[in-house]
Amino acid sequence: MTTTPETQQALLAQVERFARDTVAPGAVRWERERRIGREAVREAAELGLTRLEMPASAGGLGMPFSCKVQVTELLGAADFAFTMSLVNTQNVAVKLNREAPPAVAARYVPGLMRGELLGCTALTEPGAGSDFSSIQTTATRVPGGWRIDGGKAWITNAAEADVALLYAQTEPGSGAKGIAGFVIDARRAGFVREPGFALAGQHAIGTGGFRLEGYVATDDEMLQPPGKAFKAALGSINGARTYIAAMSCGMTAECLRVASEYGERRETFGQPLAGHQGWRWRIAEAASELAACRMMVAHSAALIDRGEDAQLAAAQAKLLSTRMAERRIAELAQAMGAEGLRERHPFGRHLIGARVASFVDGSTEMLLERIGAAMRRPA
Ligand SMILES: Cc1cc2nc3c(=O)[nH]c(=O)nc-3n(C[C@H](O)[C@H](O)[C@H](O)COP(=O)(O)OP(=O)(O)OC[C@H]3O[C@@H](n4cnc5c(N)ncnc54)[C@H](O)[C@@H]3O)c2cc1C
Image (cartoon, rainbow, N blue to C red; front, side):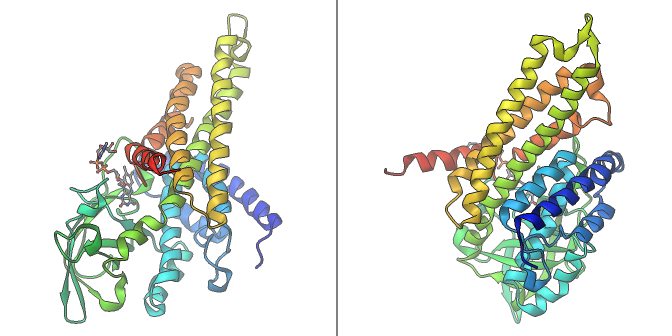
């Protein structure tokens, strides 16, 4: 299938309907039941969203990165947590298809694309988050493979994931250069899953952890050898920062839509809320900041589409979009009065979503470090 602006627009129209009819109502239920929206992941798979960036030759839609960004904004507007779970599974399918030996990829990629398997990417550990090079999970050489021991925590989809892309240290004390990347099968001996984390919200992310106790990965399950894995793990980070920024725009846009509509219906002091200048300035501020953040996201996505350096653009887009989301969603919730607290409205859920967005794929402080480093480059 050739990707054209028309096929992209047709897909986006389907995604918009799916977000409105399935994801938004499902989000309330998944949060109450504290679980991943697996039935909706399977439905998303039927739309092709688990193989969005997979090349057409491998059965994917072969969409450009900028299309993924628009999809994540639309889905994020309905539910950040569901979008995180889905996009992480998509990413694992694409990486396995691209980097794993065909026999290894064949074990997981078809199930991931059908939405039957869930994937996760595991860098973070109980003792290592921002400082990825300090991970303590070890990979020790054994005949025919690697014995892996250690624990991972705060991993999207870990509560139920079937397959993990995992990073482990092959030479303790060597930092980034000793880190290697493996594909891990959650159904194999030595994989011990921990219960999903009980959090302030966003349970459809399936955040959790697991331990590897004498788990053996075969030689062909090492996806990146030491010396290559650290860079590979961070290789997709500009894309991740850009789509997290897009999801933050989506959450803000949805709260803006709900508050704006409410402002026309609810009357105080003889006129609609939107008739009061002080009230509608809040709407104007949020709408203006959203427009600016969307431009930053589009700029970063265009750089990635063209294969150009997006480090600075992606970091800046995520920094400002996540900050905007947290501040503006809180203000828009205030504009709703008590009504904004109802479960059927997205304000509370999206506020926690914006909080999570400020940590994943580079916390606000790590983004500032990245931007600060770029500013020090000689002109
Ligand atoms: C819901 C959720 C899903 C996640 N999904 C995944 C996943 O799929 N895979 C994965 O590997 N990880 C995942 N993470 C983990 C995420 O990447 C980490 O939370 C993030 O890297 C920050 O690490 P930390 O939380 O351990 O904070 P820490 O590293 O303990 O830092 C604590 C605070 O101090 C700040 N800080 C740290 N060092 C500095 C410094 N040098 N200067 C200034 N400030 C500093 C940090 O920015 C942070 O605000 C997820 C997290 C959440 C909440």
